[in-house]
Length: 206
Image 1 (tube, rainbow, N blue to C red):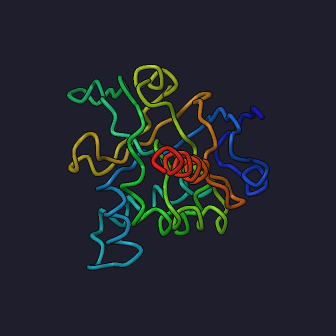
Image 2: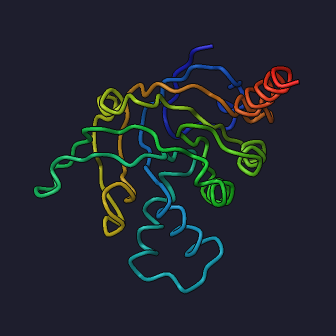
Image 3: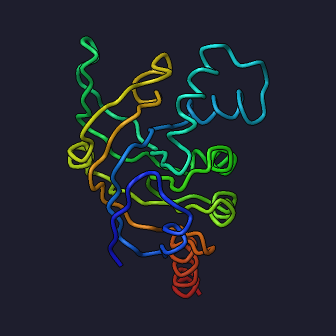
């Protein structure tokens, strides 16, 4: 099935999606990788210290954007850093499994409806997909320049001190192509492929 979704996304729209569905995503989303997820975890989920005033202000800005929204595992290449006239030159997905320790908590905190990345995630995230509900969207690896063309606007950036790839970039997308590979019904294409591959491997070496 092919469908188009625009943020904020409803629970009902998420529940209609199944593994294998092609989706074109439009609207506002936020990029976030290792540093961003750890920052959220350490400051707002399992605080190790009192958040700074600046961090609290950033949280208050991104919270309504992520409510019903999307987080994209992406370390973009960005032009216009000197002038702050930001433009994504490359925006390919980052391997998602690195965020497995944090992702479920982040999904629940913000009521995320989707996580975009590559390579899939594991059981904690799949469980959160069922509970929130949400889905995992697999983006096209090796197509960073093509995906950047789907990013029509860089609205803003936070935590740039993390570095350009690790910062939280608030972006607007238009018909960003993805495939559902983990749905809200407890199905993971990544698990299915892994299990089938294991059986074939065992047959080959037996």
